[in-house]
Length: 240
Image (cartoon, rainbow, N blue to C red; front, top):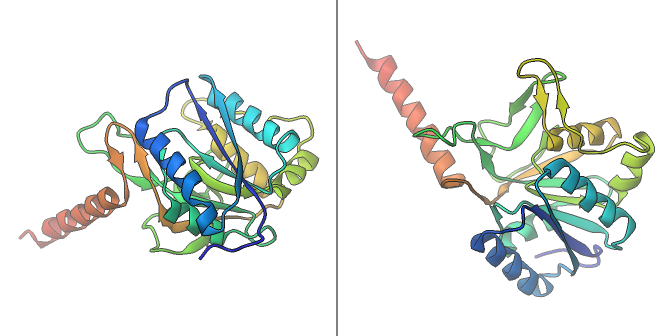
């Protein structure tokens, strides 16, 4: 059961001018079912374009300066949500102890390959340019993380003042590119700024959503892939 009197919520997303029907269906169903689940959605925000870092900054600033909601739910236009996963984030989040709670979706660097290797878009920091996936994924837990993707993430309005005081006049989503493969994307930059500003970040490993790429990277595929890898390794070990 969703908490009541928790404040108001805005939905926000960025896209390139077109959205998938699955994404749209998920957003509409959540908006329609939210009132019955104690989640007061009062605004929605959409930023179109082809430069995701700039789009995210525009959306963040518009929420900060124009939209008077207590919470913002980021949803990327290739993520499919429903009221159950949104309620899980809403129930888990708290403006003091858990002002930022990410849901869980899966990503892969082998999307063009024959068998994509899935990992959760949840991370621990290793060093300036290296992050480590939260893997194996804990089952249905709310855990502290260093960073995540912004594809499905709930945050409280208090993060605005924390970030702007710590980084006055700066973009919160400026990609960092070094020599070779030392590249830090806009989402990781944002979460690292949150950490520097003293804002705790958590993830709900039970708030699982589909990530629509060339095929659906979801919890079933994640479980199947890594079960297969375990079996494959066991077979290799058992060979005479």
